[in-house]
Amino acid sequence: MLLPNLILLYVDDPAKSAQFYVDLFGREPVASFPSYVAFELENGLTFSLWSTQARDFVSSGTGHRSEIAFMVKDDAEVERLYEEWRGNGIMIEQELRTAVFGRTFVALDPDGHRLRVCRPDD
Image (cartoon, one colour):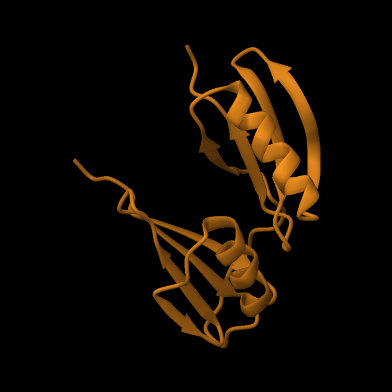
């Protein structure tokens, strides 16, 4: 079975975005170059940032019509992270609310990528 093993976000300032994710993940990147930064995560996924200013960058896409979701164990953890992220100055796009699947909120990284925190569906 073919499984994705890399998430790549296009960013304007890789150093600024890298620091945001160092703080969020609580870990340093495994690779860091002026136009590319990569984090290895415990679940086997590589999370990378690629500069839109890189000489070999090509993309015709615009906007952010996707989300990176962080599924946590329960509603209390969603609420705890909401307070922590707000307290750390992370921009909240969608305030804490109850959706059909439980408590959730959406934050934004420095480039406007949507970061959803929620719990797994019952």
